[in-house]
Image (cartoon, rainbow over all chains, first blue to last red; front, side, top):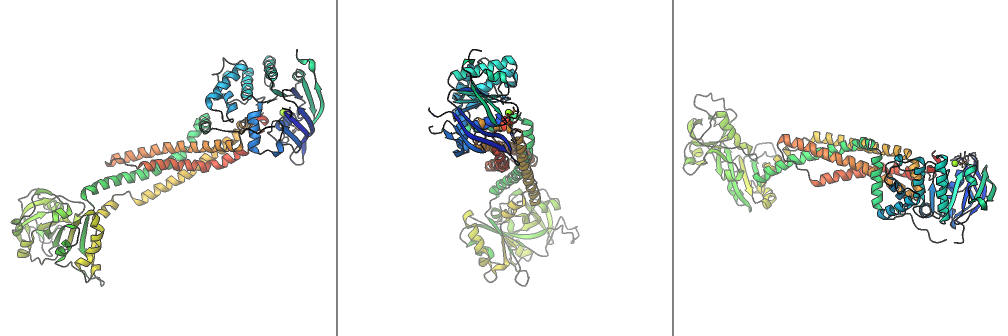
Length: 232
Length: 397
Ligand SMILES: Nc1ncnc2c1ncn2[C@@H]1O[C@H](COP(=O)(O)OP(=O)(O)OP(=O)(O)O)[C@@H](O)[C@H]1O
Ligand SMILES: [Mg+2]
């Protein structure tokens, strides 16, 4: 794969009229297997950027590519296909379904791939074990701690073996210990070859990432690589 | 960059998504499908009660037969009564397919009383008529007591009473004497009533020979009962008037008593109309209720929709999910309503002594109709759901 997993060229995003600018000309390349933090204060445009990187939203101008696909040329079904097979999302609020078990929540990650239910469950089991929740498969989200819930959500994001994981404030609702666990899991996933993008306002969290993209007022202020951050 | 693999939702998964959506809010599901349930219950009950009552009539008719026609004199173009010609019975017998013909001929001015002490004006609404031909076989009438006329008794002053006649005169068995046309007549038999020939109930029948001898009977029949093979009924019906009275066929009245019987016993039309109306309105309101519930549900589940979109659901998948959920909601109401309608029918049938008879197609159609209502009600919410922005999962904090 020569094409980067994500490429943004002069991407802007404005909302409403009179237009307020959330993104003002972003150029960003994320290679396959990379791990980085997009860090900025509240209202700086992080979520807006994640929406575009994740093909949930379209840029007002500029070009955005995911795995070489020009997002502007894809229709709804194609964008959805991209999300189903290439991208895994992790949210601050977990967004788990209360009525079903952890295992079923994870299996939902494969619902729109057309994989038969049995295989979905088998793969969900593997993913849950991967995040250290092999012993909690039958539990419902309400019976799990915040950290465990986020790990279930991570398992759901990775169950389809996506090439890119997008996490919006993944530790935002967690205490320090659970947050550290989540980061460790994301690291492991990255070590296995998945590109991981973490969005955060938390500098400390960002410091743990090999690459940090700082944004403010919809613009990139700095793009730093920190080779020595592996052993923290 | 390679070809994109498509998003795909299996139909089995769509099914369980629908159930899952309803299970999440069971109380709401029950309440919002109530209207549908009531609507379809009313419809099923109306149809069920009417078909059950008709089943009884049909059963009765299959015993009585629908192959009997009744002929009587009508009026001419000037409104004058026209009697049936004397040779009518003989002529009818020649029509192909005719199997039995019997007739009665009322004798004007001759009345029947319990005995000679009764005042002549108190006729009790009873009349005296001559029985001729195979009257019993043609009408399907049976004797409750005694026997029918034979060669001998028809020449003597004997009578067979209709059921009402016997009751009014207070006669319970054969052998009693009555006062008929100024003479003592012996009652030889009493007829049971028959639904196809209610005319026989309030007459006293006498044999043809004695009627000519003693009562001045001229041989003019007033009503003819004819039975033919089942396939020939329509043809015979056509042929009867011109055969009986070639000069004035329109003055001959032909009727099929089984038709009237079939029509009489069905549920009151106005009542049926009312219930069907109430049912349709309930269905409509129920459909609106389902649509309303689904619209609210879509608003509440924005983040679920956003999540599904993030997991790869297409707009179409979201649309199908909500459409299917609406149909399921409505179908559940339909199922409950069908059951309720059946129950109401069963209760009505029981209290009337009918067997419950609802065509399975009606039950099936009932559920189908509710699914259609659900589909209609689901369109708007489903479209709204599919238009929910995929960013909804991130946006909701
Ligand atoms: N749907 C929207 N309509 C109008 N303005 C919006 C919308 N979404 C975001 N904005 C604006 O765009 C800017 C960037 O918002 P964004 O949500 O990307 O910030 P953020 O960096 O994610 O902030 P936070 O850390 O608080 O989540 C903000 O000024 C915000 O008010
Ligand atoms: Mg944000």
